[in-house]
Every structure is written in structure tokens, then in C-alpha cells.
Image 1 (cartoon, rainbow, N blue to C red):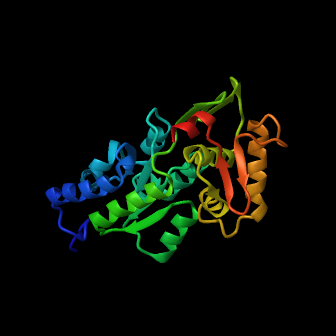
Image 2: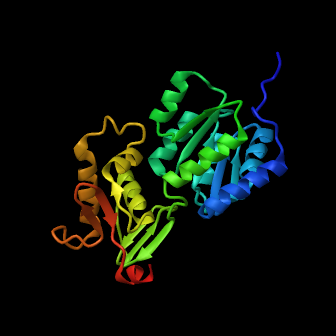
Image 3: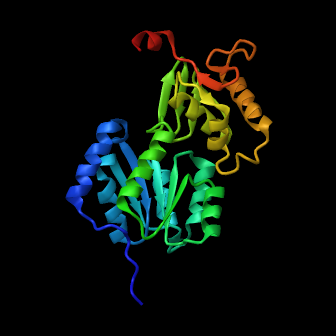
Amino acid sequence: MEEKPYYTDTIDYQKIRQQQAVFLSKDEGHQNMNIQIVEDDRTLSEGIRMALQESANVFIQNDSIKSAMEAALGEISIDLVILDLNLPDGNGYAYLKWLREQFSMPVLILTANDLEIDEVTGLSLGADDYMTKPFSIAVLRARVHALLRRTGGQETKVYQEDGFFFDFAHLVFKKDNRTLSLSVNEQKLLQLLVANKGSIMTRNLLLERLWQGESDYADENALSVTMNRLRGKLEERTDNITFIQTVYGQGYVWKKTEREKKNV
């Protein structure tokens, strides 16, 4: 049986670098990414790294679920995951499900599993995109950049302002040196808000990001309940909101400080 190729296009690394320069000139904020590639085929993993090397400072290449989990809990905060499903120690869905219980970074599944049920399952479990092998390097790169744009680029890893200390990589949340206990959805919501400080986050976008692939089934009040609980833990008085403000008819915004407004 003839082995299927990895790519639908011929690999021309000089051309790849030229195309990458065009992408980066339009979107320079994505060149400081930390990307995790979970793929047991080392040749393919290296090919993906080469194709995206101008988009990231660090690549974390793992060939198993166990090593991927260990890396995700390490000191390097991951901004995006490219995930194969067929791994030597289990199905990639297990890692995806575990990720979604811990983190909110975008996940792109890249697999030979081309059945519709596989794609539906992956998206339902929280994947942000799904590609099948063989694949186009140019399309992969475009989808990676689209995911980073959609999620606001590099995730805020540490936020320290107004008496708050949020370390999203190590799940440490404090207010005036007092530790806060936040649920997974409260953590995701908080990170989305502070990463996009001063920008209105619509209710639909927040619903999609918090309940990935299940926003159509999430109760309309679920976001309001999560928001109220988060405010109760962050604000001095919930009848005088300071940080997470409601923009009626649109969504919510993490308010910029007066100093930040003056620097704009």
C-alpha cells in the first residue's frame, strides 16, 4: 500500500519563509508565541515546526499524551496546541478533554481521521479547528494565525495591577495578597477580559469561548451567573462595579486605568 503524503503541497522552505514574512508584516504580534505540537511522527512534527518557525519563539514537541500533559504544566505557558489524535499512549481526545478542564488556549486538531464523526467529536470536546492529513502548509499557517487573531493573540499569562495578581499559567489568583478560589470558567472568563482590557467582549463571544462547541446549548443565564460570581470575588462592592463593567446591549469590558487611558 502506498503511504499517503503528509502535505498536499511541495515543501519549499525558501518560499515558506517568504510567505511567513508577509504574514508577520501584517500581524507582528504573533511572533512571540509558544506552540505545542503533539505528534508522534517526528518527521511530521519537525515539518510543522519548520512551517511555523517564524510565528513562535518556542516550540514544545511531544510524542505522547503523558509528555504533553507534563509540558502543559511546566514553566512555559502554551499559547496554542496542534494536536494529533492517534498517539501511542491513547487517543488525543483524552488530552483535549484534560486541556479544557485546565486551560483556555486554542487547540487545532491535525489528524488522519477524516470521518465527520471525528470532527464533530473534536469540536464538541472544545477544539477550535480541525484539519485532516494530508494538508496544505499554507492553509495550516493561515488557520494558526486566524486562531491567534480570534483569541486576541498571545494570552495574558501574568496580570498585576490594582492590587490584583493573576498567574494564569500556574493558576494563582490573588487580591491584596489574599488567595482567590476561582472555578475553571471563572478563570477563563477573567483571562479573556484582562487580555482584552479596554475592549468590549460580546456575550456571544464569551459564551463561545467558555462553552466551546456547546454555546448553542448553554443556558443564557450561565454567563450571567459566572460573571456575577467572578465579580463577587474581585469587586469590593457589587453595587458599585469598578473593574468588570457592563456595556448594555453589547457585553462586558475590563476597565482601563486612568494612567492607561492617558497613554493611548
